[in-house]
Structures are given as structure tokens and as C-alpha cells.
Image 1 (cartoon, rainbow, N blue to C red):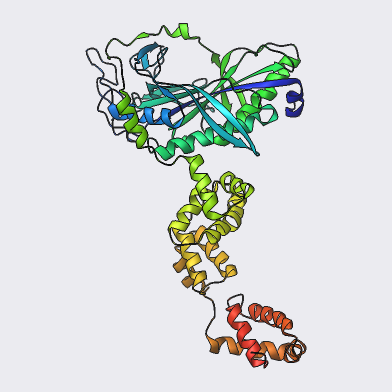
Image 2: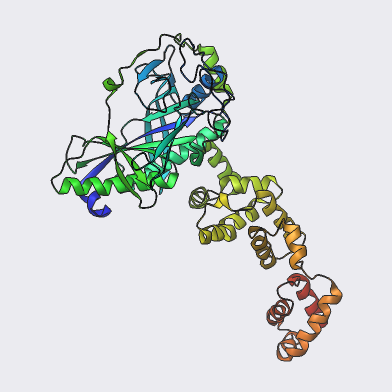
Length: 494
């Protein structure tokens, strides 16, 4: 069913479960390294492989990390909790169970506010709990990369046992047609918040942050929520938005045709923007949770929690408010900067020496345009804030004008080198030498006698046409301000 029609007939209810790998040096319950991209099965030991007789020991740095996340999400940090065994049998779970938390999580009852098109949505957090990550299966052969149709499968246990924080929202209601945007805004704000804490790199493309998106629909005016589906392991912010939209359209079509929604996991297909069926969704009892007998309960002291609270950095929402005041931005201008993913880029450009106005101009105009043309995120352009600041420094020194600066950016983005190298190779420096300028100006005056006579007669505004002619003759490389000064002097108006 088309999206607008679906929203006219049904009200969506969302829920988002986010898994975040912590950036600790060692795993959750053993001393194995956690380096991303290491050769398969080289970061394993008897503990994370679940060999008989091995015993887990809790990683203190990981517990500090989850407490910081809980505090930043306005959660209550409980005074007592414990781990449980979550039993399920997949090749990537070497122990055939996962150490997690069930009915006694570490952080509860939080919230995170997000803004969408000027409206504030308060996303309630049900729980933030600690667990260990699974290994990774690689299905070889076939066209989809999934087990169906594969010739054989390989398992890499390097990731098994890495500290994993799961953040679970309460049902998100009253979002209406903005449901996909709210889901994306929540994932974006959560990623930025966790990154600001320094506890994870939250790189979705590497699996450091993964979202499970729950969607259900209920008819307008109804009071009972519909059956939900869970789209697993969505690994980009854009895909979170697309997955919600796709499920709303799919479920609305099924319900309108008299069908029934099956509670199941689903997989998001990047190529089509749609979801496909995975497996029926287990309930909690299917996992046969019971307390982990090899780990003692955790009882974080209030003193320790407050010590960790004191270490929290400026969080993204406060950061945006401060930057808005410092840069003198309106609410709309700030929203545009944030939506473009330019906030940190602009700030780093300022730190590298550019003023706020120039940094914002380049990232929001010239570079945003080029990112759009290339179909990439602004941060993925092959140019650094330091390079942008260097270009602006040359503009400030009148070695470049804005037109030449754009050509320098073009060269840097094309891989021709650093700004100074591009300027030298392309011969882009502003012509400010009076001798060189006067030769061009003399020719321009000779070629534009009528305009020159107007200036001589006191119509100084007419000099603009002559400056334009100088810029054209110099291929945009003349110092326009100096050219104007020399023109007026030669025409007896200086």
C-alpha cells in the first residue's frame, strides 16, 4: 500500500533495539584482543570459545562504559543486578548460550529527546543491558550472501565475546507520518551520544552499531497494538528510515487485504529498500534464561556511579546549543548544519584556523553540493577540515579568491594533492602584482572606452563592468579589489 494511504488508515508503533560494541582493548569475559579486521579465529581463547573448564571474569572497563551510556541516557543505575544465560543454538555461539542480562538489567527507565522538522519527540528507554557479542558466519556461494543457496559456511569467532551493550526503547507512539524520520533521528542522536562518550566508535559499516527495528500497525481509532515484526541488524541510518517505511507499506497492504501479520524477524534488502522474511520470533521463555552460575552479581556503589557521572563530556544536545550561540545560527540554520552532517566538520575546520562563517560557507555550499553530486555523505568526501582551513587561509591572504578556491577544492577532491600542491600545479594563485595587473587593465580600458569615459566623468559605479572585464581577461585570477583600486587611479578617480 502507498505510504500516505497506509498512514491514513493505520497508526504505526515503533520499537528500536540497538546493539553497540564497546571499544575495550579486551573482550567482555576474557583477555582476548578486540582488533577489528584481524585474521579469522586469531583472537580467541578457551573462555570465548566456551571450552570445558573455562571460567569468565567480568571486564571492569566494559561496565564503566555501559554505566556512562546509561547516565547519558538519563537512566537509573540499579544497585544490584546479575548476568543470565540466554540459550540458543547457532554456529556463531560457541558456548551454545550467550551471557546477557534478562530480568535484572544494569540501567533502566531513561529517555532521549530527538528533533524532527521542528518537533521534539521524547523516546523512552526501557533498559540498557550488557551482554557478549556473537561470532560471525560467512556463507559462501549463492547470490544473497545468506545461508539459503550457499555452498558452505565459515565461522569467525573473533567477535565472539566482545562487550555488547543493548539499548531497548519502550514503544514509540504518536509519530504519525514522521515515523521513519523519528526512527532515523533516534538512531542518529544515539550514535552521536555514544561517540561523544568515547566508549565506542559506533561504525555502523563495521557492525559496531546495529539496529533492530520493530514495527506494528493498528487501525486508526483502535486501542490494541498490532503484531510486530523485527527487522534485524540494520546497518545504516538511511536504512533505518527506509526499513520503517517499507514495513509500514508492507504491513498495511497485508492488513487491508484481510491478511494477518506474523511475528517474525525480517531482513532489510539494501538494493530494493524492502524487507524479506527471516524466522519466527522467539519469546523470552524460548531462550530458557537462568542466572549465570559462573559470575557473581554486580552491585555498583553510588560513589562509583557518581565518579563516572563526573567524567561525562558535553553531550551532543548541549554541544549543539553552545555552538549555535557561538556561531550565531538560527534554529533553521543549525538544523540544516546538523542534517547535513556538517557540525563536527565545521567545528574541526574552525579549530584548524578558519573563522566560523567561512568554515560553514564551504561545507554547507560548495562541499555539500559536491557530496550530493557524488551521492556520498559529506564526511566521506576525500578532503579534511585542515585542508578546508588551509584554502580559507589562502583566501584570507588574498592569494586566492572564492572562484579560485572552488577550483582548489575540485583538485583536492580529484586526488591531485593538498591545497598548496593543487595551486602550484594548476597555477591558480591570484594575480596581485601591480605590474601584471596594469598590463591587463590598460588593455581592458582600451577595449572598453565607453565604460572608461563614464568612470572619468564621475560615474564610479561603471567601474564594476571594467573590473569584470579584468577578471575575465585574467581567467578569474586577478585580485579584484586591487584591480578596482588601479582602475580608479588610472581613470582619475582614485
